[in-house]
Image (cartoon, rainbow, N blue to C red; front, side, top):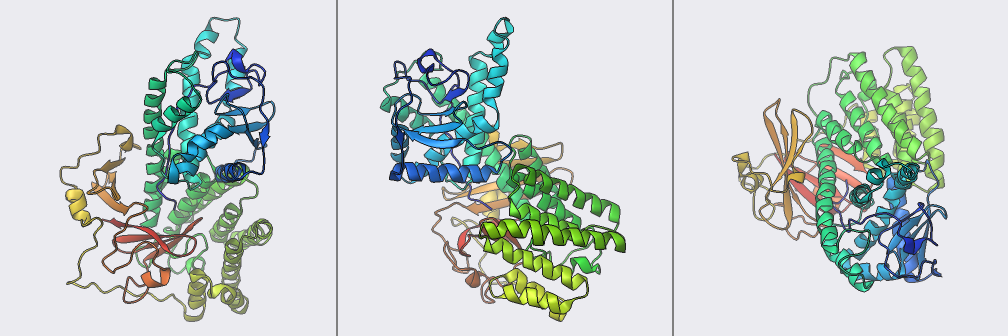
Length: 561
Protein backbone atom coordinates (compact mmCIF):
# COMPACT_ATOMS: atom_id res chain seq x y z
CA UNK A 1 0.00 0.00 0.00
CA UNK A 2 1.26 3.37 -0.79
CA UNK A 3 1.31 6.63 1.02
CA UNK A 4 -1.71 8.84 0.67
CA UNK A 5 0.07 11.26 -1.50
CA UNK A 6 -0.50 13.57 -4.21
CA UNK A 7 -0.09 16.63 -5.93
CA UNK A 8 -1.80 18.87 -8.23
CA UNK A 9 -0.50 21.82 -9.97
CA UNK A 10 -0.91 23.80 -13.00
CA UNK A 11 -3.82 23.29 -15.23
CA UNK A 12 -2.33 24.66 -18.42
CA UNK A 13 -3.44 24.82 -21.99
CA UNK A 14 -1.61 22.73 -24.52
CA UNK A 15 -1.29 24.11 -27.94
CA UNK A 16 1.29 25.62 -30.16
CA UNK A 17 1.74 29.33 -30.45
CA UNK A 18 3.67 30.91 -33.35
CA UNK A 19 6.53 31.77 -30.97
CA UNK A 20 7.65 28.12 -30.76
CA UNK A 21 7.33 27.24 -34.42
CA UNK A 22 11.01 26.37 -34.65
CA UNK A 23 10.64 23.84 -31.85
CA UNK A 24 7.84 21.93 -33.53
CA UNK A 25 4.46 22.03 -35.16
CA UNK A 26 1.55 20.01 -33.78
CA UNK A 27 4.08 17.62 -32.21
CA UNK A 28 5.01 19.92 -29.33
CA UNK A 29 2.93 20.33 -26.19
CA UNK A 30 4.39 22.98 -23.87
CA UNK A 31 3.24 23.75 -20.35
CA UNK A 32 3.26 27.40 -21.39
CA UNK A 33 4.84 29.56 -24.08
CA UNK A 34 6.52 32.71 -22.86
CA UNK A 35 5.77 35.57 -25.25
CA UNK A 36 8.86 36.71 -27.12
CA UNK A 37 11.02 33.82 -25.92
CA UNK A 38 13.78 32.44 -28.13
CA UNK A 39 12.05 29.67 -30.13
CA UNK A 40 15.18 27.56 -30.61
CA UNK A 41 16.12 24.68 -28.34
CA UNK A 42 18.54 25.67 -25.60
CA UNK A 43 21.74 23.81 -24.67
CA UNK A 44 21.43 20.52 -22.82
CA UNK A 45 22.17 20.28 -19.10
CA UNK A 46 23.87 16.97 -18.25
CA UNK A 47 25.54 15.37 -15.25
CA UNK A 48 24.67 18.16 -12.82
CA UNK A 49 23.04 17.28 -9.48
CA UNK A 50 19.84 18.96 -10.73
CA UNK A 51 19.75 16.93 -13.93
CA UNK A 52 20.52 13.64 -12.19
CA UNK A 53 17.79 14.18 -9.57
CA UNK A 54 15.20 15.14 -12.20
CA UNK A 55 16.13 12.14 -14.34
CA UNK A 56 15.79 9.85 -11.31
CA UNK A 57 12.28 11.19 -10.69
CA UNK A 58 11.42 10.77 -14.38
CA UNK A 59 12.59 7.15 -14.46
CA UNK A 60 10.62 6.38 -11.32
CA UNK A 61 7.48 7.79 -12.94
CA UNK A 62 8.00 5.72 -16.08
CA UNK A 63 8.45 2.59 -13.99
CA UNK A 64 5.31 3.34 -11.96
CA UNK A 65 3.21 3.72 -15.09
CA UNK A 66 4.63 0.45 -16.41
CA UNK A 67 3.37 0.96 -19.97
CA UNK A 68 6.02 -0.10 -22.46
CA UNK A 69 3.81 -0.69 -25.47
CA UNK A 70 5.48 2.33 -27.08
CA UNK A 71 9.05 3.61 -26.72
CA UNK A 72 9.45 5.93 -23.73
CA UNK A 73 10.52 9.51 -24.58
CA UNK A 74 14.03 10.51 -23.59
CA UNK A 75 14.34 12.89 -20.64
CA UNK A 76 16.30 16.11 -21.16
CA UNK A 77 16.99 19.25 -19.16
CA UNK A 78 17.77 22.44 -21.07
CA UNK A 79 18.98 25.96 -20.37
CA UNK A 80 16.10 27.90 -21.85
CA UNK A 81 13.23 30.02 -20.60
CA UNK A 82 10.46 29.27 -23.07
CA UNK A 83 7.99 26.56 -22.05
CA UNK A 84 8.61 25.47 -18.42
CA UNK A 85 8.32 21.85 -19.55
CA UNK A 86 7.26 20.25 -22.80
CA UNK A 87 7.03 17.07 -24.80
CA UNK A 88 8.53 17.17 -28.29
CA UNK A 89 7.02 14.28 -30.21
CA UNK A 90 9.25 14.57 -33.27
CA UNK A 91 12.40 14.33 -31.15
CA UNK A 92 10.78 11.84 -28.73
CA UNK A 93 11.87 14.04 -25.81
CA UNK A 94 10.35 15.34 -22.61
CA UNK A 95 12.17 18.45 -21.48
CA UNK A 96 12.21 20.16 -18.10
CA UNK A 97 13.75 23.60 -18.22
CA UNK A 98 16.46 24.22 -15.65
CA UNK A 99 14.78 27.36 -14.29
CA UNK A 100 11.46 25.53 -13.86
CA UNK A 101 13.31 22.88 -11.85
CA UNK A 102 14.75 25.64 -9.66
CA UNK A 103 11.26 27.01 -9.00
CA UNK A 104 10.21 23.53 -7.82
CA UNK A 105 13.11 23.54 -5.34
CA UNK A 106 11.57 26.52 -3.51
CA UNK A 107 8.90 24.15 -2.18
CA UNK A 108 11.31 22.59 0.33
CA UNK A 109 10.35 19.09 1.39
CA UNK A 110 7.75 19.00 -1.41
CA UNK A 111 10.28 19.92 -4.11
CA UNK A 112 10.54 16.40 -5.58
CA UNK A 113 6.74 16.16 -5.59
CA UNK A 114 6.50 19.33 -7.67
CA UNK A 115 9.06 18.01 -10.16
CA UNK A 116 7.22 14.67 -10.29
CA UNK A 117 4.01 16.37 -11.20
CA UNK A 118 5.56 18.54 -13.92
CA UNK A 119 7.12 15.45 -15.51
CA UNK A 120 4.03 13.30 -14.86
CA UNK A 121 1.97 15.93 -16.65
CA UNK A 122 4.11 15.66 -19.80
CA UNK A 123 4.24 11.85 -19.62
CA UNK A 124 0.45 11.80 -19.48
CA UNK A 125 0.31 13.73 -22.76
CA UNK A 126 2.33 10.86 -24.21
CA UNK A 127 0.40 7.98 -22.70
CA UNK A 128 -3.01 9.52 -23.45
CA UNK A 129 -1.98 10.36 -27.05
CA UNK A 130 -3.02 13.99 -26.84
CA UNK A 131 -0.83 14.98 -29.77
CA UNK A 132 -2.50 12.34 -31.93
CA UNK A 133 -5.85 13.91 -31.10
CA UNK A 134 -4.57 17.31 -32.08
CA UNK A 135 -3.08 15.99 -35.33
CA UNK A 136 -6.38 14.33 -36.08
CA UNK A 137 -8.22 17.60 -35.48
CA UNK A 138 -5.82 19.44 -37.79
CA UNK A 139 -7.15 17.28 -40.61
CA UNK A 140 -10.40 19.26 -40.42
CA UNK A 141 -8.67 22.60 -41.00
CA UNK A 142 -10.93 23.43 -43.95
CA UNK A 143 -14.15 22.83 -41.99
CA UNK A 144 -15.96 25.03 -39.52
CA UNK A 145 -16.07 22.10 -37.08
CA UNK A 146 -12.28 22.40 -36.66
CA UNK A 147 -12.82 25.60 -34.71
CA UNK A 148 -14.86 23.71 -32.13
CA UNK A 149 -12.72 20.59 -32.11
CA UNK A 150 -9.44 22.42 -31.78
CA UNK A 151 -10.51 25.35 -29.67
CA UNK A 152 -9.37 26.41 -26.25
CA UNK A 153 -11.90 24.11 -24.59
CA UNK A 154 -10.28 21.05 -26.19
CA UNK A 155 -6.83 22.21 -25.12
CA UNK A 156 -7.98 22.85 -21.57
CA UNK A 157 -9.50 19.35 -21.49
CA UNK A 158 -6.17 17.79 -22.51
CA UNK A 159 -4.26 19.79 -19.94
CA UNK A 160 -6.75 19.12 -17.16
CA UNK A 161 -6.50 15.40 -17.89
CA UNK A 162 -2.70 15.66 -17.89
CA UNK A 163 -2.82 17.40 -14.49
CA UNK A 164 -5.19 14.87 -12.96
CA UNK A 165 -3.67 11.66 -14.33
CA UNK A 166 -0.16 13.04 -14.07
CA UNK A 167 -0.84 13.67 -10.41
CA UNK A 168 -2.14 10.13 -9.91
CA UNK A 169 0.98 8.84 -11.68
CA UNK A 170 3.12 10.78 -9.19
CA UNK A 171 1.08 9.24 -6.36
CA UNK A 172 1.54 5.72 -7.70
CA UNK A 173 5.28 6.37 -7.94
CA UNK A 174 5.34 7.17 -4.22
CA UNK A 175 5.73 10.94 -4.21
CA UNK A 176 4.27 12.99 -1.42
CA UNK A 177 1.25 15.20 -1.10
CA UNK A 178 1.62 18.35 -3.18
CA UNK A 179 -1.46 20.53 -2.97
CA UNK A 180 0.15 23.88 -3.71
CA UNK A 181 -0.61 23.97 -7.41
CA UNK A 182 -1.83 27.55 -7.43
CA UNK A 183 1.32 28.67 -5.61
CA UNK A 184 3.54 26.80 -8.07
CA UNK A 185 2.00 28.25 -11.20
CA UNK A 186 2.14 31.72 -9.64
CA UNK A 187 5.86 31.25 -8.94
CA UNK A 188 6.48 29.93 -12.45
CA UNK A 189 4.71 32.91 -14.02
CA UNK A 190 6.65 35.31 -11.80
CA UNK A 191 10.03 33.69 -12.47
CA UNK A 192 9.42 33.67 -16.24
CA UNK A 193 8.10 37.22 -16.29
CA UNK A 194 4.73 36.16 -17.68
CA UNK A 195 1.77 38.48 -17.21
CA UNK A 196 -1.78 37.76 -16.04
CA UNK A 197 -2.97 37.43 -19.63
CA UNK A 198 -0.95 35.41 -22.17
CA UNK A 199 -2.31 35.19 -25.68
CA UNK A 200 -3.98 31.84 -26.36
CA UNK A 201 -4.05 30.75 -22.72
CA UNK A 202 -6.53 31.18 -19.88
CA UNK A 203 -5.66 33.99 -17.49
CA UNK A 204 -3.34 33.26 -14.60
CA UNK A 205 -6.29 33.59 -12.21
CA UNK A 206 -8.32 31.06 -14.17
CA UNK A 207 -5.41 28.66 -14.41
CA UNK A 208 -5.00 28.71 -10.64
CA UNK A 209 -8.71 28.01 -10.20
CA UNK A 210 -8.54 25.17 -12.71
CA UNK A 211 -5.55 23.79 -10.82
CA UNK A 212 -7.57 23.64 -7.61
CA UNK A 213 -10.48 21.87 -9.33
CA UNK A 214 -8.14 19.37 -10.95
CA UNK A 215 -6.53 18.66 -7.58
CA UNK A 216 -9.92 17.67 -6.22
CA UNK A 217 -10.53 15.19 -9.04
CA UNK A 218 -7.08 13.73 -8.62
CA UNK A 219 -7.56 13.40 -4.86
CA UNK A 220 -10.76 11.45 -5.49
CA UNK A 221 -8.82 8.89 -7.56
CA UNK A 222 -6.16 8.62 -4.87
CA UNK A 223 -8.76 8.17 -2.13
CA UNK A 224 -10.62 5.52 -4.14
CA UNK A 225 -7.36 3.63 -4.62
CA UNK A 226 -6.59 3.83 -0.91
CA UNK A 227 -10.09 2.60 -0.04
CA UNK A 228 -9.73 -0.33 -2.45
CA UNK A 229 -6.51 -1.35 -0.71
CA UNK A 230 -8.13 -1.09 2.72
CA UNK A 231 -11.10 -3.20 1.65
CA UNK A 232 -8.71 -5.88 0.37
CA UNK A 233 -6.91 -5.75 3.73
CA UNK A 234 -10.06 -6.50 5.72
CA UNK A 235 -11.28 -9.15 3.28
CA UNK A 236 -14.04 -7.27 1.44
CA UNK A 237 -12.73 -8.45 -1.91
CA UNK A 238 -15.88 -8.12 -4.00
CA UNK A 239 -16.35 -4.50 -2.96
CA UNK A 240 -12.66 -3.75 -3.49
CA UNK A 241 -13.03 -4.99 -7.07
CA UNK A 242 -15.60 -2.29 -7.76
CA UNK A 243 -13.23 0.43 -6.53
CA UNK A 244 -10.38 -0.82 -8.70
CA UNK A 245 -12.73 -0.95 -11.70
CA UNK A 246 -13.82 2.62 -11.00
CA UNK A 247 -10.18 3.72 -11.14
CA UNK A 248 -9.48 1.61 -14.22
CA UNK A 249 -12.13 3.50 -16.17
CA UNK A 250 -10.04 6.65 -15.62
CA UNK A 251 -6.45 5.46 -15.33
CA UNK A 252 -4.70 2.35 -16.60
CA UNK A 253 -1.44 0.96 -15.32
CA UNK A 254 0.13 -2.42 -14.70
CA UNK A 255 -0.40 -2.01 -10.94
CA UNK A 256 -4.15 -1.42 -11.30
CA UNK A 257 -4.57 -4.49 -13.50
CA UNK A 258 -2.39 -6.51 -11.15
CA UNK A 259 -4.43 -5.45 -8.12
CA UNK A 260 -7.64 -6.40 -9.90
CA UNK A 261 -6.18 -9.82 -10.56
CA UNK A 262 -5.02 -10.28 -6.98
CA UNK A 263 -8.45 -9.28 -5.68
CA UNK A 264 -10.23 -11.73 -8.01
CA UNK A 265 -7.79 -14.43 -6.84
CA UNK A 266 -8.56 -13.75 -3.19
CA UNK A 267 -12.29 -13.71 -3.88
CA UNK A 268 -11.98 -17.10 -5.60
CA UNK A 269 -10.35 -18.60 -2.48
CA UNK A 270 -13.69 -18.31 -0.70
CA UNK A 271 -15.17 -20.75 -3.22
CA UNK A 272 -12.86 -23.64 -2.26
CA UNK A 273 -13.75 -26.32 0.23
CA UNK A 274 -11.40 -26.21 3.25
CA UNK A 275 -10.23 -29.78 2.62
CA UNK A 276 -9.01 -28.99 -0.90
CA UNK A 277 -5.21 -29.56 -0.72
CA UNK A 278 -4.55 -26.57 -2.98
CA UNK A 279 -5.70 -24.09 -0.33
CA UNK A 280 -3.88 -25.76 2.56
CA UNK A 281 -0.85 -23.53 1.97
CA UNK A 282 -0.34 -19.77 1.87
CA UNK A 283 0.41 -18.47 -1.59
CA UNK A 284 2.96 -15.70 -2.18
CA UNK A 285 0.18 -13.64 -3.70
CA UNK A 286 -1.09 -13.34 -0.11
CA UNK A 287 0.97 -13.82 3.05
CA UNK A 288 -1.85 -15.18 5.12
CA UNK A 289 -5.39 -16.31 4.51
CA UNK A 290 -8.29 -15.73 6.84
CA UNK A 291 -7.86 -17.85 9.93
CA UNK A 292 -11.59 -18.51 10.19
CA UNK A 293 -14.79 -18.10 8.24
CA UNK A 294 -17.02 -20.23 6.07
CA UNK A 295 -15.71 -21.42 2.74
CA UNK A 296 -17.74 -21.93 -0.40
CA UNK A 297 -19.45 -24.98 -1.74
CA UNK A 298 -16.53 -25.93 -3.92
CA UNK A 299 -18.50 -25.27 -7.08
CA UNK A 300 -15.92 -25.12 -9.81
CA UNK A 301 -17.80 -22.82 -12.19
CA UNK A 302 -17.91 -19.67 -10.04
CA UNK A 303 -14.47 -20.28 -8.62
CA UNK A 304 -12.78 -20.95 -11.94
CA UNK A 305 -14.55 -17.99 -13.54
CA UNK A 306 -12.95 -15.72 -10.96
CA UNK A 307 -9.54 -17.35 -11.44
CA UNK A 308 -9.77 -16.98 -15.22
CA UNK A 309 -10.76 -13.36 -14.73
CA UNK A 310 -7.69 -12.90 -12.53
CA UNK A 311 -5.48 -14.37 -15.26
CA UNK A 312 -6.96 -11.92 -17.78
CA UNK A 313 -6.08 -9.01 -15.49
CA UNK A 314 -2.53 -10.32 -15.01
CA UNK A 315 -2.22 -10.68 -18.78
CA UNK A 316 -3.26 -7.06 -19.19
CA UNK A 317 -0.54 -6.01 -16.73
CA UNK A 318 1.98 -8.10 -18.67
CA UNK A 319 0.83 -6.58 -21.99
CA UNK A 320 1.72 -3.15 -20.59
CA UNK A 321 5.05 -4.34 -19.20
CA UNK A 322 6.38 -7.71 -20.43
CA UNK A 323 9.07 -7.52 -17.74
CA UNK A 324 6.72 -7.11 -14.78
CA UNK A 325 7.70 -10.11 -12.64
CA UNK A 326 4.90 -9.81 -10.01
CA UNK A 327 2.20 -10.34 -12.66
CA UNK A 328 3.93 -13.50 -13.92
CA UNK A 329 4.25 -14.81 -10.36
CA UNK A 330 0.63 -13.99 -9.56
CA UNK A 331 -0.47 -15.65 -12.80
CA UNK A 332 1.47 -18.74 -11.76
CA UNK A 333 -0.25 -18.75 -8.34
CA UNK A 334 -3.62 -18.55 -10.08
CA UNK A 335 -2.89 -21.47 -12.39
CA UNK A 336 -1.89 -23.49 -9.32
CA UNK A 337 -5.51 -23.23 -8.14
CA UNK A 338 -7.27 -23.56 -11.48
CA UNK A 339 -9.04 -26.72 -12.62
CA UNK A 340 -11.74 -29.06 -11.40
CA UNK A 341 -10.54 -32.44 -12.67
CA UNK A 342 -7.27 -34.23 -11.96
CA UNK A 343 -6.24 -33.81 -15.60
CA UNK A 344 -6.95 -30.06 -15.57
CA UNK A 345 -5.12 -29.59 -12.30
CA UNK A 346 -2.03 -31.42 -13.53
CA UNK A 347 -1.95 -29.40 -16.74
CA UNK A 348 -2.40 -26.11 -14.91
CA UNK A 349 0.22 -27.04 -12.31
CA UNK A 350 2.73 -27.34 -15.15
CA UNK A 351 1.65 -23.94 -16.43
CA UNK A 352 2.13 -22.53 -12.95
CA UNK A 353 5.61 -24.01 -12.79
CA UNK A 354 6.48 -22.54 -16.20
CA UNK A 355 5.31 -19.00 -15.42
CA UNK A 356 7.05 -19.04 -12.04
CA UNK A 357 10.27 -20.93 -12.75
CA UNK A 358 10.88 -19.62 -16.28
CA UNK A 359 9.14 -16.31 -17.00
CA UNK A 360 9.07 -14.69 -13.53
CA UNK A 361 12.40 -16.16 -12.46
CA UNK A 362 14.34 -14.82 -15.46
CA UNK A 363 12.90 -11.32 -15.08
CA UNK A 364 13.45 -11.22 -11.32
CA UNK A 365 16.99 -12.56 -11.65
CA UNK A 366 17.92 -9.95 -14.26
CA UNK A 367 16.50 -7.24 -12.00
CA UNK A 368 18.19 -8.71 -8.88
CA UNK A 369 14.74 -8.83 -7.27
CA UNK A 370 15.50 -11.07 -4.30
CA UNK A 371 12.00 -10.82 -2.84
CA UNK A 372 10.31 -12.13 -5.99
CA UNK A 373 12.93 -14.86 -6.36
CA UNK A 374 12.18 -15.97 -2.80
CA UNK A 375 8.43 -15.93 -3.45
CA UNK A 376 8.91 -18.00 -6.62
CA UNK A 377 10.60 -20.69 -4.54
CA UNK A 378 7.72 -20.59 -2.06
CA UNK A 379 5.23 -21.26 -4.86
CA UNK A 380 7.42 -24.04 -6.25
CA UNK A 381 7.47 -25.53 -2.75
CA UNK A 382 3.67 -25.45 -2.64
CA UNK A 383 3.50 -27.20 -6.02
CA UNK A 384 5.90 -29.90 -4.78
CA UNK A 385 3.86 -30.41 -1.61
CA UNK A 386 0.59 -30.69 -3.54
CA UNK A 387 2.28 -33.14 -5.92
CA UNK A 388 3.32 -35.40 -3.04
CA UNK A 389 6.99 -34.41 -2.76
CA UNK A 390 7.31 -33.17 0.85
CA UNK A 391 11.12 -33.41 0.95
CA UNK A 392 11.52 -31.10 -2.04
CA UNK A 393 8.89 -28.77 -0.59
CA UNK A 394 10.68 -28.66 2.77
CA UNK A 395 13.97 -27.79 1.11
CA UNK A 396 12.40 -24.90 -0.78
CA UNK A 397 10.52 -23.54 2.26
CA UNK A 398 13.51 -23.91 4.60
CA UNK A 399 15.80 -21.94 2.30
CA UNK A 400 13.61 -18.86 2.70
CA UNK A 401 12.19 -19.36 6.20
CA UNK A 402 14.73 -17.12 7.94
CA UNK A 403 13.88 -14.11 5.76
CA UNK A 404 10.21 -14.75 4.96
CA UNK A 405 7.33 -15.12 7.38
CA UNK A 406 5.37 -16.68 4.52
CA UNK A 407 7.98 -19.38 3.94
CA UNK A 408 8.10 -20.13 7.69
CA UNK A 409 4.32 -20.43 7.80
CA UNK A 410 4.26 -22.85 4.87
CA UNK A 411 7.03 -24.91 6.43
CA UNK A 412 4.96 -25.17 9.62
CA UNK A 413 1.91 -26.24 7.61
CA UNK A 414 3.99 -28.86 5.81
CA UNK A 415 5.38 -30.30 9.05
CA UNK A 416 2.40 -29.92 11.40
CA UNK A 417 -0.58 -29.88 9.06
CA UNK A 418 -1.64 -26.32 9.93
CA UNK A 419 -0.26 -22.95 10.91
CA UNK A 420 -0.21 -21.69 14.48
CA UNK A 421 -3.19 -19.54 15.25
CA UNK A 422 -3.31 -17.59 18.50
CA UNK A 423 -6.39 -15.62 19.35
CA UNK A 424 -5.38 -12.40 21.02
CA UNK A 425 -6.98 -12.34 24.43
CA UNK A 426 -9.15 -9.30 24.96
CA UNK A 427 -8.23 -7.32 28.04
CA UNK A 428 -11.45 -5.81 29.43
CA UNK A 429 -9.41 -3.16 31.22
CA UNK A 430 -7.28 -2.16 28.20
CA UNK A 431 -7.74 1.31 26.78
CA UNK A 432 -9.27 1.38 23.30
CA UNK A 433 -7.09 2.38 20.37
CA UNK A 434 -7.03 6.10 19.68
CA UNK A 435 -5.68 8.39 16.99
CA UNK A 436 -5.37 12.03 17.84
CA UNK A 437 -6.90 11.31 21.23
CA UNK A 438 -10.11 9.91 19.69
CA UNK A 439 -11.43 6.38 19.49
CA UNK A 440 -12.91 5.45 16.13
CA UNK A 441 -16.40 5.76 17.60
CA UNK A 442 -15.60 9.28 18.77
CA UNK A 443 -13.92 10.19 15.50
CA UNK A 444 -16.92 9.06 13.45
CA UNK A 445 -19.64 9.85 15.99
CA UNK A 446 -20.64 6.20 15.46
CA UNK A 447 -21.91 7.14 12.02
CA UNK A 448 -24.85 9.03 13.46
CA UNK A 449 -25.74 12.08 11.45
CA UNK A 450 -23.06 11.27 8.93
CA UNK A 451 -22.00 14.52 7.27
CA UNK A 452 -19.74 14.18 4.21
CA UNK A 453 -17.07 16.77 3.65
CA UNK A 454 -18.31 19.68 1.54
CA UNK A 455 -15.86 18.81 -1.26
CA UNK A 456 -18.09 16.75 -3.53
CA UNK A 457 -15.18 15.03 -5.27
CA UNK A 458 -14.50 13.06 -2.09
CA UNK A 459 -17.99 11.56 -2.26
CA UNK A 460 -18.14 8.84 -4.93
CA UNK A 461 -21.14 6.74 -5.88
CA UNK A 462 -19.65 3.65 -7.51
CA UNK A 463 -22.99 2.07 -8.36
CA UNK A 464 -26.49 1.85 -6.93
CA UNK A 465 -25.25 0.10 -3.79
CA UNK A 466 -21.68 1.25 -3.03
CA UNK A 467 -20.74 4.75 -1.86
CA UNK A 468 -17.43 6.18 -0.69
CA UNK A 469 -17.12 9.37 1.31
CA UNK A 470 -14.99 11.21 3.84
CA UNK A 471 -16.08 12.88 7.02
CA UNK A 472 -14.22 15.50 8.99
CA UNK A 473 -11.32 14.04 10.97
CA UNK A 474 -10.80 15.10 14.61
CA UNK A 475 -7.41 16.62 13.88
CA UNK A 476 -4.89 17.54 11.16
CA UNK A 477 -2.84 14.36 11.52
CA UNK A 478 -5.53 11.90 10.48
CA UNK A 479 -8.44 11.36 8.13
CA UNK A 480 -11.64 9.32 8.13
CA UNK A 481 -12.91 7.24 5.19
CA UNK A 482 -16.37 5.68 5.07
CA UNK A 483 -17.47 2.84 2.80
CA UNK A 484 -21.24 2.39 2.55
CA UNK A 485 -22.92 -0.77 1.26
CA UNK A 486 -26.59 0.16 0.89
CA UNK A 487 -27.71 -3.39 0.09
CA UNK A 488 -26.32 -4.67 3.38
CA UNK A 489 -27.16 -1.47 5.27
CA UNK A 490 -23.58 -1.39 6.48
CA UNK A 491 -20.99 1.33 6.97
CA UNK A 492 -17.28 0.55 7.37
CA UNK A 493 -15.19 3.30 8.99
CA UNK A 494 -11.42 3.76 8.67
CA UNK A 495 -9.61 6.30 10.85
CA UNK A 496 -6.03 6.55 9.63
CA UNK A 497 -2.87 8.35 10.65
CA UNK A 498 -1.16 10.54 8.08
CA UNK A 499 2.60 10.47 7.37
CA UNK A 500 4.41 12.33 10.11
CA UNK A 501 1.89 11.46 12.87
CA UNK A 502 3.76 11.59 16.17
CA UNK A 503 1.37 9.67 18.40
CA UNK A 504 1.49 6.04 19.47
CA UNK A 505 -0.87 3.09 19.67
CA UNK A 506 -2.26 1.93 22.99
CA UNK A 507 0.58 -0.61 23.08
CA UNK A 508 3.10 2.23 22.86
CA UNK A 509 4.15 1.67 19.24
CA UNK A 510 4.68 4.57 16.85
CA UNK A 511 6.10 5.22 13.40
CA UNK A 512 9.42 3.43 13.02
CA UNK A 513 8.51 0.47 15.25
CA UNK A 514 9.85 -2.85 13.93
CA UNK A 515 7.63 -5.71 12.80
CA UNK A 516 8.82 -8.01 15.57
CA UNK A 517 7.64 -5.48 18.16
CA UNK A 518 4.15 -5.45 16.63
CA UNK A 519 3.74 -9.23 16.41
CA UNK A 520 5.23 -9.88 19.87
CA UNK A 521 2.87 -11.85 22.17
CA UNK A 522 2.72 -9.00 24.66
CA UNK A 523 1.85 -6.53 21.87
CA UNK A 524 -0.52 -7.43 19.02
CA UNK A 525 0.63 -11.01 18.38
CA UNK A 526 -0.01 -12.93 15.14
CA UNK A 527 -2.24 -10.96 12.73
CA UNK A 528 -5.49 -12.24 11.28
CA UNK A 529 -4.13 -11.57 7.82
CA UNK A 530 -0.84 -10.44 6.32
CA UNK A 531 -0.65 -9.07 2.79
CA UNK A 532 2.38 -8.28 0.69
CA UNK A 533 2.64 -4.92 -1.08
CA UNK A 534 5.29 -3.65 -3.50
CA UNK A 535 6.61 -1.43 -0.68
CA UNK A 536 6.24 -3.70 2.31
CA UNK A 537 3.46 -5.44 4.16
CA UNK A 538 0.02 -4.93 5.68
CA UNK A 539 -0.72 -6.54 9.07
CA UNK A 540 -4.43 -6.85 9.79
CA UNK A 541 -5.93 -7.33 13.27
CA UNK A 542 -9.49 -7.25 14.50
CA UNK A 543 -9.79 -3.46 14.69
CA UNK A 544 -6.40 -2.10 13.63
CA UNK A 545 -4.26 -2.30 10.48
CA UNK A 546 -0.50 -1.65 10.38
CA UNK A 547 1.29 -0.47 7.22
CA UNK A 548 4.96 -1.50 7.08
CA UNK A 549 7.62 -0.30 4.66
CA UNK A 550 10.24 -2.33 2.80
CA UNK A 551 12.43 -2.34 5.93
CA UNK A 552 9.63 -3.92 7.97
CA UNK A 553 9.13 -0.78 10.04
CA UNK A 554 5.82 0.87 10.85
CA UNK A 555 4.83 3.78 8.61
CA UNK A 556 1.25 4.38 9.77
CA UNK A 557 -1.82 2.60 11.03
CA UNK A 558 -5.59 2.56 10.68
CA UNK A 559 -8.32 1.90 13.23
CA UNK A 560 -11.43 0.44 11.60
CA UNK A 561 -14.91 -0.65 12.50
